[in-house]
Image (cartoon, rainbow, N blue to C red; front, side, top):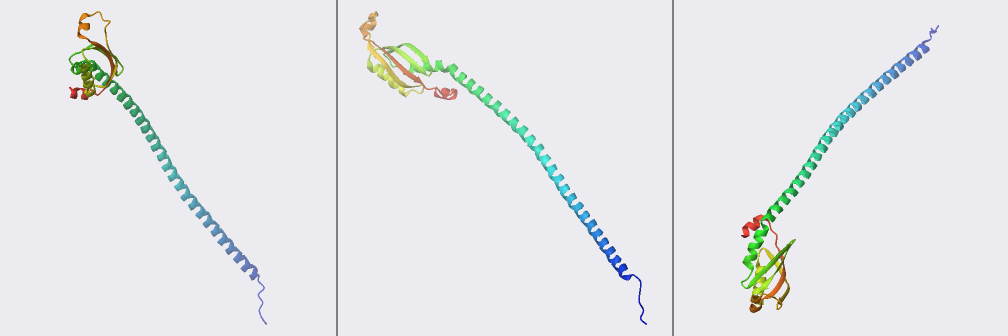
Length: 195
């Protein structure tokens, strides 16, 4: 007679397969959790590194902005000093200007021309005087045109003064004139080189 196994081996086999499945699922879940933890740790580490880099860049940017601000202040100070130096140089140049102008005016006035008034308005001289002849006055105007100190002479008027009370002026036939002359302003170095 054949032997019949009445033990519940199928349920035991089924239970064993179920236990293996649960073990496998638990291992997979544990491995997944471990993998997620490692990935999160790596990403967190990278975020911390990037945050540290960002903080470093923010600090360096603040330092650079402070240096830029200092450079702007230094440039403003430099510009102010340059303006002061230019003003001082202009004042220094203007200090000797009347002497140079009078010295050169004496050199360019031709014999026979007598100046009785010189007035400076800005960079323009208004000159008036007497001339023995128009040729002497023309020579003076040519001398003004070739001068380093003066330019663009413009004769305003010339007339024989018959109404004068001075007998010498009547006898000599002196003509009254007035003219405008521009001043060539230059630096002190050029002024000194020209003289």
